[in-house]
Amino acid sequence: MIGPGEIRTKAEKIWQSGLLLRAHLRGEELFPLDIPFRKPTGKEVLERFAEVRAWMLSLREAGKESRGFGYSLDFSTVNHRQLGEQRFPSRIYFETLADLLRLIGRQRDFVCFRELTEVTLAAHPLLRPWLEQSPFNVLEGREVWPRLLAVCAYFLRNPAPGRYLRELDIPGVDSKFVEQHRRILREMLDILLPEDAVDRTVTNLAGAGFERRFGLRYDEPLVRLRLLDPALAAPFGLNDLSIPLSQFLTCNLPGRRVFITENKINGLSFPPVADALVIFGLGYGVQAIKDADWLREREIFYWGDIDTHGFGILSQLRGYFPQVRSMLMNRETLLAFRHLWVSEEAGKRCLAELAHLDEAERRLYETLRGNALGEHIRLEQERIAYAWLRQWLDENI
Image (tube, rainbow, N blue to C red; front, side, top):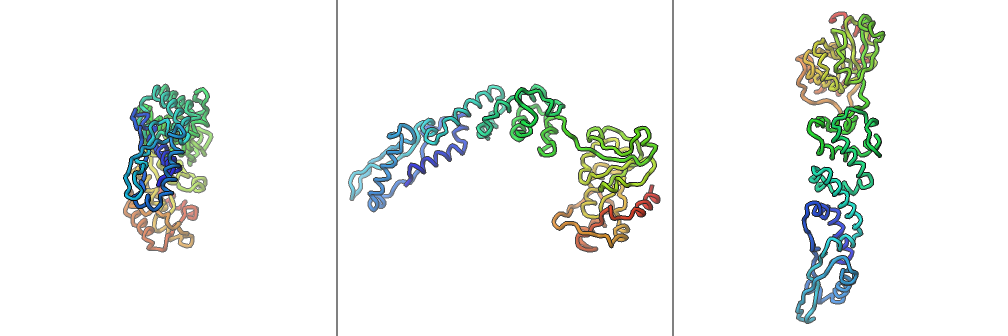
């Protein structure tokens, strides 16, 4: 037998489901709204008559008839063989939205929701489906909602503004505010902005994802490189450069040959090579440079660890630049430094089918992947003797 406390719990669950808020937005009428309950059986009435009477009394005392708000009761008359004519609750329901809201103490929440959504839809009617789907976003953000709308209005006036967050001139809004509320702002801006103002290839908010998605400037990753030929470095007076990624993609650096090395120290210590430069420290981040069209006109050499991930990165890079050649990633080098082998971490190896390896590279990758020479072996590139590197350069460059 349902009690007043359980009725209140059911009413709170109705609120938490968002049903009432969605109905308001859609103009749907839900009331009177019934609360399902199990009626006492004839056997229960006979055997627990005093308990049943106490139950009915508690329902009356806690209901709208006594308190002026909350749930209402309808009764039906039952002729019981032993007890005679009796009246039992046949229906428990809320006559109005106000009755339910007052019972669970949600009047202010509803009024707040109604007022904020009216303002929002007046300015941005496209947000209606989103508000219906996630109505509690409004209440969770009630303290900052006007500022969220101000940010949306700014981006509508200035799509893909090409500025840092710090530069956005929005009254009452600073860069920290946008950073703190970027999840909900992303959802709103995705709906409101024109297609050409959103880079939908950026799906993760990490790594300045919000800024990249919505056309803002940000603290870009740097591409570090060294000019290996003094003649190339002379005009700059510099040979060790860190260049913002966007500038690297279009800078068209001098040098016919480009070496890319996974390891930072190998890039720093790479020996002089005529008409060449070395890029280092990218790892799987080689995808960042895939749009550097000037690299398509260069000879490119990749030097990575001799392990499953080293070949994974090689294959990835060659997928962007088909002319890439590997260096010191061969069986001869692996066996020459057997005494310096270490192990790849179990469970974190690259086991994928790699589409961009040549035949020799593929055989060595399969050897490593299949543990044919030992379990999870790897030869880190910084363990290879410097003289071995110089010999390879002398023979191949």
